[in-house]
Amino acid sequence: MASDRKYLFIYCLILFLLFLWNVPLLDPDEPVYGETAKEMLATGDFLSPRIYGEFWYDKPPLFYWLEAASFSILGISTFSARLPSALIGALTVLYVWYETEKLFSRRTGFLAAAILATSLEFTVLARSAVTDMTLTAALTVALFSFVRQNYVPAYIACGLALLAKGPIGFGFPALIVALWLLAQKKFTLRPIMALRWYWGIPLACLVGLPWYIYMTAVHGQPFIDTFLGYHNLVRFTAPEHVGKDHWWLYLVVLTAGCFPWTGAVCGMLTRLRDFARDPVKLYFIVWAAFIFLFFSASSTQLFSYILPMYPALAVLTALYLEEIFDGRRSRFFTQLHLFFIAITAAALGMAPLTPAGGDFGKYGTVLVLLLLGLLGVRTFQWRHFRTFLLVQGALALCLTIAAWTLFAAPVREAFTSADLSMRVQLTEREDAPLYIDPFYRPASAFYHDLYGLRMPDELTPSEQVPDGSYLLVQKKITDDWSPEEHAQWHIIWETPTASFLRKL
Image 1 (cartoon, rainbow, N blue to C red):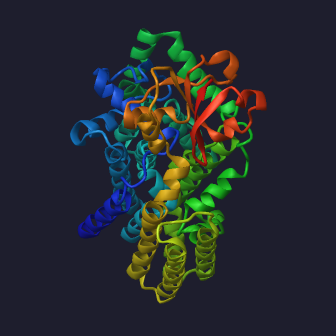
Image 2: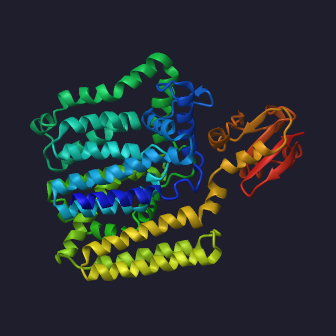
């Protein structure tokens, strides 16, 4: 089994690192983390995060520290910005294997790790310079440790989760364990005291709280109002992006994010009632369901938020597939599996993107996905366990390579501003103020040290921007301007998504 873990770890490194540099950091989140870590190195201040030279209270510092360490070793680049997430993702896969094996069996551990590593959302976020993978790793250690009654690593991991994201590092494990005890009708004094919280909470605070104490002492009310007030309370109760919060959003995210295991996850849902009779399996049900329902109720919703439920989902799905491999359940999964592979292939074929290689590249990828889907069904029916997992791994790798090679150009054009800021830098300009849309400003700073001035939130060109100023702005904003506003600006150049203007 040690050699199997080694091979899976190598596979994870290939899956998470291959062509990682092909697409620049995606606006707006990835460049924010990259630029903040870059400024940490530049200032030598690793406690008070900054962006554009101003203090930045958006997130705790753990992921910034990891990125800064990567930058100091490998230099500042797209690859080094994303490397911490990739390494943490690969280590999380191995950890899930080890812990699941202890709870269930060797094969369940292997299968759960393989499912987690190759699930599309996990792969995408392991290839992203955002904090979600770091948080997921910390919560995974905490939650596995609680169910296995390893309380020292459980509480240390809670402290690290507090440094990765904020109060949910304490809140999620506490609520999940409490709900699990309630579901078993064991929320009584003895089981609660058995959690060793009386020394565990101080241990978690010893790990996670010193940074918060420092920030409160140094920055005072602005830190409290911005970090705790806005980024934790307000964003849960009020949508950050109006009109983009929907109760059904994470159903769609989960359907796509579980590829190529969506069929298996759907089949697993039919077994939840029976699984819930086992206290340990019930724990993973509560873990996954709590995170899904919590963020479905949140007013601010991003696809990455539900990533911490994937380790629990992988374990439950592994248990379901084991029953089928052992001949104890029907093979309903095979029809579902092929259905979701076909849906994914069809969506890729209909995507309004022109990849490298044109239609040949796009439809060639569609054909490969369908053939691998068919092969996966056949190997599953023949009960070739390892061959089936190899096919699933090939499916995940095929889709990842296609996304970061064939589709790199359209993604780069639509979702990154690294090229836009380079074009601004190369455009001959007079010595006049440069205003940059907040959406484009992080990448402009990270890639080209082009900081500019923040574009006013409510842009009224005639009143808020001096004559002669330059402006890099999203085209969808200028499309809403009145003819009078347009008349005050000269278009220097435009792309399908952006405009570079100068005020007359």
